[in-house]
Length: 251
Ligand SMILES: O=C[C@H](O)COP(=O)(O)O
View: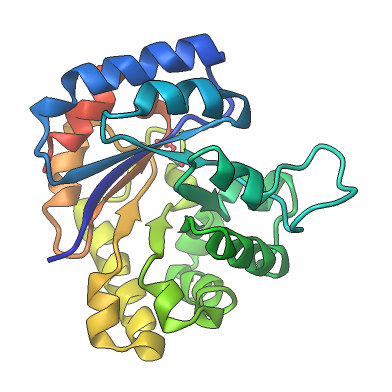
């Protein structure tokens, strides 16, 4: 039995006070979803203290949206994995397409970040996914394979056990376009096969693979019913408590 997870990625939205309000809104109605569905909120660095405090005792876990690729030192403006862990952060979203695209994040930096996340006792939510032109050229499998091989294949079996993967087709992020249920299943299944090549069928069968890209309450059910879709990484719809919990209720 695999974990089922609905994780929000608030991106660069809300003030800390608005974030606390949002968290409290989610906590108030999360009981409408099955208790087995794990809820995570990926908040801006500035919110970790206040939102983390509000989340205490709710069962909602806190994720950061990035971390530094160095442990400490003269890296002005950066936030280390150790700092995040010391604030009670449990997960770090890494390799999001927006960071790959706008901040030049490469497999090389991601390997360093992922290692620091593990060293500090947290778990990565590692994002992969193809761009529109890559999908049009039917290269989605090749792109996802490379993103896995260059980073995930460097993990130890013990590290892999804690990994969450988020498949996010770039063409579906914030665009209103969603992969069809069958498209999502097809590539999630492929991703699991690639993971099995390195870590074995059994370990791969336990890895949660989330779908991300314009997921909302109205389309979550069809996606989550697919055998290899274990939840979602939710952007826009995670900024509304009803929608976020509505997605969790799709399980
Ligand atoms: O991390 C979340 C994804 O980028 C999805 O964003 P979206 O739900 O707004 O399309």
